[in-house]
Length: 242
Image (cartoon, rainbow, N blue to C red):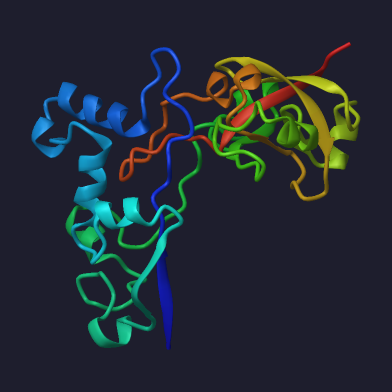
């Protein structure tokens, strides 16, 4: 089975405003300032596009000549039947030999979060709810597009999703403003009661400047393998705002 492949060069809508930089320039400058300039040799976005297109039959000039995009080659499916998967064994690995050789568990192992009713019962009495952050809003891309009237008319403000039973337990109702607190900080959000969220857990999205999830989270308790912080397992509490 084959499918057509299509590529298009995304165009710059406006020139950067003020001191704003493209993401690519920010990454390259960070790399150079961290002493890794050899891995970030590019000076322009065109050079970066050229670099990533080297492995394809398409060039930057091709895309510039075809502003609406172009088809190229064919998409092969079930390639793994011919060359296997990108693992040491070339098979689907439920047990990671790579992690095992690095001294870690080859299989996922549950570890209690650094903050929870089990690991910190005293703290859980003050902060009885579990917070998960980073939910995505389909109308936006990270912090982008929030000034678009069409998107804001559908999703105008930051919310905290709470199970109706949990909301009732803590005396808050759908549409009311609450203060959401962790040991690190607090933000104000509007309640959205939904059965999609398990009881005793609340969820907030990322990307809101006036209610940033970063105010609530920290870098403690990072995963030893990935370095990822506990953004989805923190104790919190809610207070109704009068």
